[in-house]
Image (cartoon, rainbow, N blue to C red; front, top):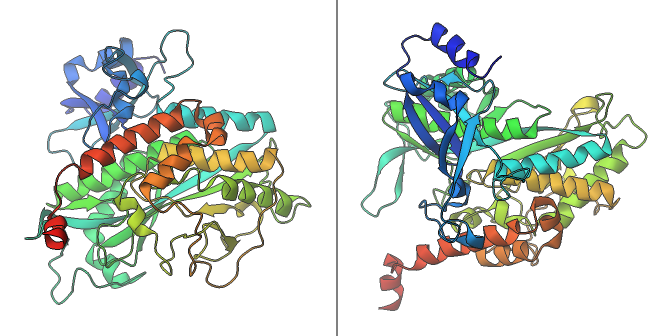
Length: 451
C-alpha cells in the first residue's frame, strides 16, 4: 500500500471522519501527538508531523529536565514522525467521528534511531535475537481499576460504582461472574473497541480488587507490536470508561487496602523452524529455559526502576500478596517473580510478574528480553525452583525503594549494554527529578506527624 492509499481506503470506508489523531506514547505511557482535521491528514503520510524530539523523556507532569542535553541545551529540536503502517483505525468512543494512527519518529541524521526513544530501544534489543537465530514470542497482561472521576473529601480515589444495589465497590470478588456481569456493558465496549482497532484482546478477568479487572492480549512474535497494543489497550480502557462518565487507573497501588495492578509479560523463544526452544519435549528445553530464567534473576534488581517507575509503584511489593518480593522462580506458582505456567510443548513459557501496570511496556519488555538474552548467551544457571509460598520473605537485596532502584539501574553496565550506554543514567536522572518535584511541596501528613 502506498504512502497515502491507506488513508484513502480508510476514508472511503469511513467518509464521516472529521479528525485524525496522530499519536505516540511518552515515557509514562501517555498518548501524545496532534489532532489534524481530515482535510489536512494526507500530509501525515507525505511529510510527517513534527514536534519536540524529547517527548519520550518527559516526566509525569510533562516536564523536560534537560537530561543529557535533551530539551533546553540542544534547543529542543523537533523530530518528524510518520505513520506506522496498518495502524489507521477508528476511535469508537469519540463523540466526533475520529480516526487515529500511530506515529514513530524518523531517526536523526546519521543515526539509526533516537537513543532515548523507548520504542526504538526495545527494537534494538529484539534485533539481538537474530544473532541467536531466535524470535521472541510475547504477550502482555494488564490489570486496572475502574474509578470515579472525582475524589473523596481527603483527596483519595473513589472506586467506581454500578447501579446494581447492595454491592460494595470495594468488595473483593476474584474470578466472580456476577462481577463480570455487573460490568458487562463497559467490558463489552472495551472488547469491541479493541477489535475495531486491531488490538488482540482476549479474556477479561475479575481480579481481587473491588473494581479491578485484567485483560489479556494474545501472543505474537513481534514484541514492539505487542507493546504498541498494550499501550493502545490502556487508551481504549480509559476512553471507554470516560464515555460512561468514569475513569480507569493503571496505578500500581491506587488503594492501600486492596490488591495492586501489574503488567505481566509472558515470553518464549522460537527457532528458525518455529519451534519453541523451551518445549519440554526437547532434550535441551529445560536447560535453555533455565538459562533464560537465570538471566532474568541476574538482571531483575538492576531493572527494578523500569518495572516500578514511581513512588506509588513500590507500594505494591508486600509479602503474601502474590507480588514478587524476591527473584524466585517456580512451576505453576504465583508467589514467584518468574512463573512457569501449567503449559507444555509449544505453549511453554516464562511469566514475568514484577512490573507494575503503569510501567512503560517498551522498557519493561526490553529489560525482560535483555535478561533472557544475557542468560542464554552466558549460559547462566538458575537457582532451585521454589515450591510453596515464595513470597513470604523479602529479599534484603531487592531494591524496594525508588531511590535505591534508580541507583542500581544507573550503575548497571549490563543494562547499559542493552538499552544504550547513556540511557540508564538518563532515565534515572529523569525519575530523580520527578521525585524531587513530587516531594517539594509540604505533604498533609507532615502536619499530622511533625507539628
